[in-house]
Image (cartoon, rainbow, N blue to C red):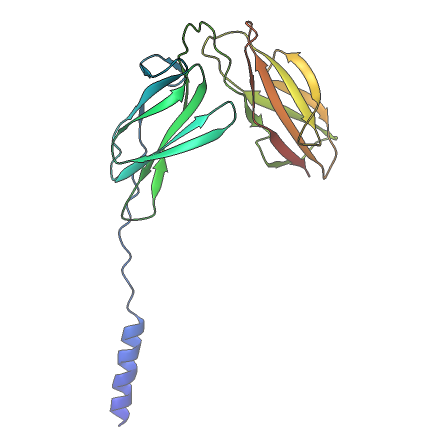
Length: 228
């Protein structure tokens, strides 16, 4: 009887020691974008109306990817549309003379894994357009949602943007404690501001309006940061 109990205990221990084999998860590679090019005025599309064109998006096949999602963002208001495809190309009708950004997510059908490509900005060419507004500015510091430490009750802010026409740019900064900040400083030529007075434990909102020499303007999304 004693030997029988020992045999049962051994079987139990051996059973507990077994491990379930985990599947070999292989992450798909990052897709390499081809077209539209970064900061391009896209003229290769098919005009579908006075205000729209059909644009073809192309990217290289990513290894270990079973499919893709293409994210196209309208930069003037930050709205996005996502398309799914098993191919490495996609045609989408977009508004002409407007700025967009696109990226591709590589998906694996065997596991919940993915990789995201770079993000490229472009303009859809407009009829007779000879000048385009700058791309909306992006926050460099603080990043949107950052918690910062202000030395001596002061902070700096900085931003970045690009312009397909390579024009000289000026900036107007709106900054305040509400989600509708007032104009803080206008016609700045550099992409930063120093010595901004802030108060501990408060949240601040800011945005950038960028203008070129032809009077074309773009407005960034609203950023915010909190002070320690």
